[in-house]
Length: 280
Ligand code: DGL
Image 1 (tube, rainbow, N blue to C red):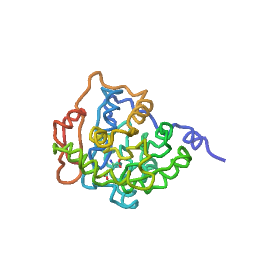
Image 2 (image 1 turned 30 degrees about the horizontal axis):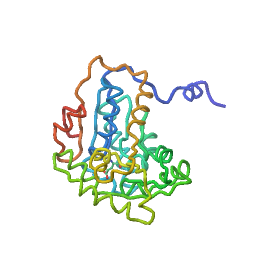
Image 3 (image 1 turned 120 degrees about the vertical axis):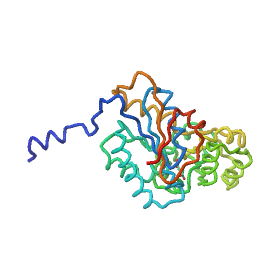
Image 4 (image 1 turned 90 degrees about the vertical axis):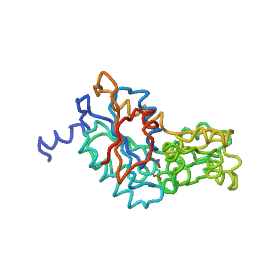
């Protein structure tokens, strides 16, 4: 028999929407990748205050073990939530989401939106039924990806490639380095070279860094469709934040990094509404 207090606690909504209009949306990634999720979110919620956290000291997540990611990500998000009191957190990183989303959700008492490979829309789109999944090495080996494939793309062949080179190229691009189409082509070509790879017609950009290289990817491989989760995640964020009162005017967002310094150009960050950079 539960007491009245226990029943009331069980019935209470787990996520109470804060009414503070200055409460930001917190984006989290290992680096600049989450900007590809921030961009469509800003298009829907232009006045939402933004804190964008880049765990540059932990970068690259794709080369880390599951245990490292599962302990690092919830701990860092806990610190960030304590410091910035966001109304909602977005793990704008496929690697962290496919490994640690449940851990983060159980550690935080605000809504947490994850980023998972867009295999479902890719399967809806593919005609050849051969889909490329381009992610980090850690993401492409996750059982989470097997489950998505079994659920939404059971009649498709999935060809997976983990590409740390492409992650580095995206960081370099935002730091102002000239990125050649050739370097993108040689990083991705192995996916098309495996048996059946020539039939790939749809590529899932299963790492948030990769939409930042979409122009180069399209130039290197113009005959495939590219699918990423950014727009869908932005809609999910807007839905969960529907009751949040935003400020009347947009304010500049903050980028927080871990470690000793971080490379992206202020001019590149300003395109995503980030005007201030601080260390955690
Ligand atoms: N942006 C990340 C992702 O979506 C991870 C990149 C990395 O740190 O390896 O998976």
